[in-house]
Amino acid sequence: MKSKKKDIRALTKEQLREFFVSNGDKAFRGNQVYEWLWSKGAHSFESMTNISKATREILEDNFVINHIKVDQMQRSTDGTIKNAVRLHDGLVVESVLIPTPSRTTACVSSQVGCSLDCRFCATSRLKRMRNLNPDEIYDQVVAIDNESRLYHNRPLSNIVFMGMGEPLMNYNNVLKAIDKITSPEGLGMSPKRITVSTSGVPKMIKKMADDEVRFKLAVSLHSAIDEVRTNIMPFNENFPLADLKEALEYWYEKTKSRITYEYVVWEGINDRKEDIDALLRFCSYVPCKVNLIEYNPIDDGEFQQASNAAIENYISALESRGFVVNVRRSRGKDIDAACGQLANKT
Image (tube, rainbow, N blue to C red; front, side, top):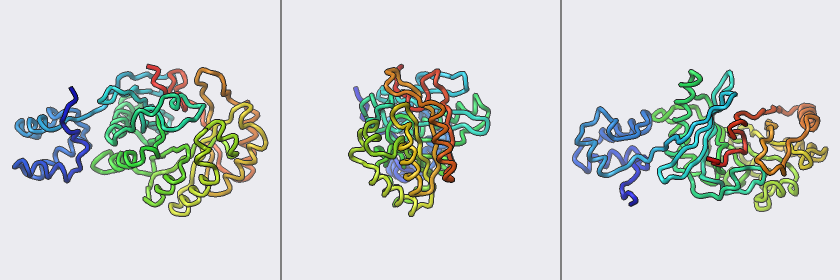
């Protein structure tokens, strides 16, 4: 039978304080419980040791803590860790810890499945089942921070919203999660160390700019030619490049924050000179950098990594025009943890 109890982490600190006052207790008790829930990551009321047994029983009678559980953890030969995360309703998402010599990055999910239909991505083959709640996003980060400390002897340094789902289609919950992650009462991380990656939802990019967010923006571009982009990312028909360009210009005007374009080069799809020329034009609109990402096959062989020569053509063209370009080698391929591979095979 489904629990009628409310998830306590859906309450604000003020609502928790009001709950205790209405139950004849002191308001500061709400502050104590809030700290246990967020700063200390309590999984149960029983573990809240500086609160009386009677108070813990009141909490138990009224609330639940819908905490995630890491169902399965896989470790790659390159140090990457993939978590299969079970949610309170039994659904599963995946998140990844990516280590380098200088940092550890959490790649977190924002939806169960995905709202969009990119043909090269394994996650898009799962229909969107639901959005993740702010606490479920937060818990993924806490779990990866713990793993970073345990296996790499250092705290988590960066977060990218590049796991399962389109973050801007779960906008409010993603912003609430980031608010908790960056709050001194949560994990206290700098928003500058957080990147939200979108496939390009123009009106939501503008909303982010209006909301004066302080995290970084990345766009999965993959082609600057509408026809090509619509072929590989069919939703582009509804959100064409002209609209995306306008939204990104608006973003930069409001935030003065440089955009990162994520770009995979595929053989026979976007490896021609006209593809490079189109990207150069698109990069000239607002200050940006380009991450050329190694492609990770998802079984059917329709999409193939372009030749090294094609990648070099992109690099030399971008660099000759003064654009910053990085080549991102994939991590965790042996455990299906690389970009575009998250699909809950378990």
